[in-house]
View 1 (cartoon, rainbow, N blue to C red):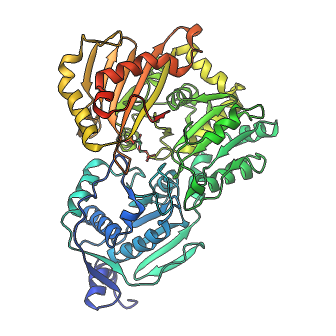
View 2: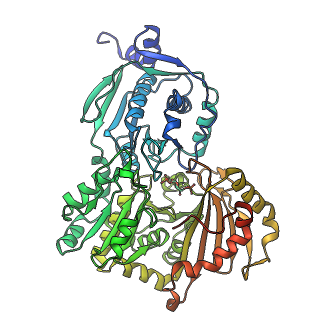
Amino acid sequence: MAQLDGVHRAWMRRNAWQICTLLGMTILSIPTTPFADQSPGTSGLRKRVSVFQQSHYLENYVQALFDVVWGENQSAAGQTLVLGGDGRFYNDVAIQTIIKMAAARGYARVLVGQHGWLSTPATSAVIRRRGASGGIVLSASHNPGGPDGDFGIKYNIANGGSAPERITEAVFARSQEISSYRMADSPDVPINRIGQFRVVDTAVEVIDSVEDHLAVLRACFDFDAMRQLFARGFRMRYDAMSAVGGPCARAILEAELGAPAGTVVNAEPLPDFGGHHPDPNPVHAQELVRHMMSDSAPDLGAASDGDADRNMILGRGFVVSPSDSLAVIAAWAHLLPGYKSGIRGVARSMPTSTAVDRVAKALNVPCFETPTGWKFFGNLLDAGEITLCGEESYGTSSDHVREKDGLWAILCWINLVAVTGKSVEELVRDLWRTHGRCFYSRHDYEGVDSGVANQLMQSLRERLPTLAGQVFAGRSILSADDFAYSDPVDGSTSERQGIRVLMDGARVVFRLSGTGTSGATLRVYLEQFEPEVTRHDMPLQEALAPLAQLAQEVAQIHTLTGRSAPSVIV
Ligand code: G16
C-alpha cells in the first residue's frame, strides 16, 4: 500500500471487501434465506431473544440494512458506524457479529461503546459529535431482558436520530429478498477495554460510553447552580433500573454535582436488568414510587428505562405526568443556559396531552402534533422548527441530540428547582394554575389477540363517519378521525396513526402499540381539561372515570376482547 498513489489507495479502500473476497482472505459470504417477520415497529425491530438467536436472523437484518444504506454490494468506505446497546442479554454476541459485518462492508471506522454499552441518547450524541454516518442501537428499550426477554436493533442516521420510515420500510423489503450476507472471519474484539483494534481494513475503536453524552449535557445546564443545590442539602433518588443509564447518572449526579454516593440506585447495568421491567412508570418503578410517597422521601425521584431514553419524574409524595413534565420544561426553558434565548417551537406525539400546547400558545411559539414515534421529531428539529419535544410514553428531549434523553429531562428538573427555588410539586401546580390542568392517563389492554385488536380498530374506523353527534356515557362526541400526518419539512405522509374522539374539553385516543413482541396492546389515552383550580386535586382516575367508560362503549372493548378493565394504567 505504501507504494500506491492516492488514486489507487482510494480505489483499494472503496473495493476492500471485494478484494478480500477475491483473494479468498477474510471475508465470508454466507448463504441465507429471508425471515418473514423482520418488519420494524414504532422503534426498530424488537423480538424475543430466542427469535434473534436463530441462525442468520440478526445477520440477515444487518445485511439488509447495509444494502439499503449503501446500496447492494456497495462498500461503506470512508464511513464511520457507531455501535452500542443497553447491555441486555445477547448484546455482546450481537456486537461482535455487527463489527465483523461492518468490516466486511468496508467501513473505515466502527466506534463501539465500552462493554458494548451506549444508551440511545449517548449514541445520538456520539454520531453527531464525531460526524459518523450512522449508528446501531441494540435495545428493546423498556421491554424486559434476559434469555426469556426481548432484544432489538435500531438504526440511527447521520443527524443522530432514528431512521425515518422510508428507510425502515426499505430495510424490511430488502430483508425479504436477500440470499447471502458477508462477514469478516476474524476473532472477537475485546470490547471491555478502551482501545483501538483492527478487523480487516476497519479500525474498531472502543470508546468511553458516557463521555460524548456528558459533553453535550454540560452545554445545556447550569452545573454550578445544581452543585450548589446539592450542597444546600437537596436530595434525590435516581433509579437506573439496572440498565445502561446508571454509569452516566453516577458520573454526573454523584461525581460532578456532589450528590451523596448511593443517590443512583440499581446503577450497574445487568443483562437481565436484575429481573426489573425497566420501564420508568408508576407500575414498573413501584419501589421508587413507594419511596417517594414515604416519610423519608427526598426532594426528587427519577427513573430511566433500558436504553435510558425514557424518564419518570416524581416530587416528594407527588407523581409528575410525562405530558406535564414537557409542559413545565417548555414554560421555564429560558432559565436553562442551553435555552436562554427561548424556544423556537415544541412538538408532541398526537396521544400526548395538550398541556404543552397551552404553554406554547402563551409563549407564542408553534406546537406540532406528530404520530407516535420519536423519529417524527427529527425533521422538525433539523429544520430548526422546534427546540423541545416529548411524548406521553415518558420521553422528553430537545435539539441537543436527536433522541429522547432520560438524563437530560432529569437534569432539567434539578436545574429548574435550583434556579426557581420551587419544589417539583410547586412547578407542576404553577403550570395547572396558569394554564389549567389536563387530567391525563393511558389505559393499556395488553396481550389481546392480534386479530381481535385489528378487528376492534377496523370496526372503529368503519364507524368513524357516524360518531359525531352520538352520546356515549353521557358525553356528546363533537368529532372523530383517524390521525394522519403530513411532515411539514419533507412532505412525507403517515396515515392511520390512531383514532381520535373529541368531546368538549376532552379527548379519547385509540391505537395499537408498535413496540410489543407478543399479541397486541390496545392503548386508550384519556384526557380531560379542567380550568378550575379548586378541582385540580380530584384523584386522577376518578376524574377520568367517565371517559374510561366512554372509551369502553365507543370501541366495544368488552364485547370484542372480553376485557372489562385495562391491565396497566399509567
Ligand atoms: C418507542 C418510541 C416512542 C413511542 C414508544 C411507545 O419508545 O420511540 O416514540 O412513544 O415507543 O410506542 P408504542 O405506543 O407504539 O408502544 P421506546 O422507548 O420503546 O424506544
